[in-house]
Image 1 (cartoon, rainbow, N blue to C red):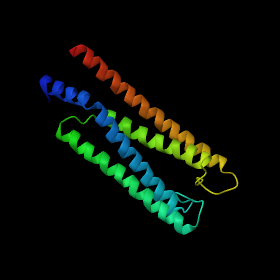
Image 2: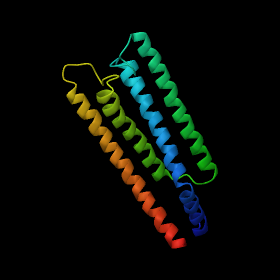
Image 3: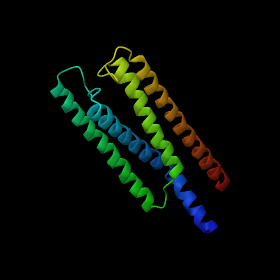
Image 4: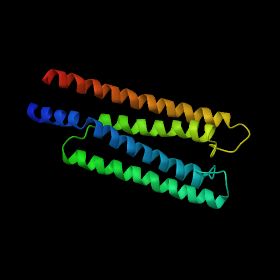
Length: 166
């Protein structure tokens, strides 16, 4: 069991590094969902490439670049997690909120901007893509909302503790 002094110092470190917890989760979330998207929809199901407005060869190159960028985000997020753990400032609930913010934000961006506005690819090339779009974007919005709720909860706790210590 932790002493009150230890719990207080951990909470203080979490509050001090609250934004780093959020950003590391956000980067890890983007990296994770981009990895899942690329492996499942690009490689296993062959539904689309990152860029489908050209040849298959260009699509494969775009997938490779996409894959490299999602791993840069993942590695950056994990380096930040390592630093947070070293400082005894890891805040799992806030980190999960950041992760869900990254996952939902990326998925909603992909489903609205890349699929519909830029039209660089669709989720799937079928006659009735509407059902796929609804499932993709609604699930993204739900994940995003849950992430925001966790971030708001931890932000309120940080604010209360900061005001209390004044």
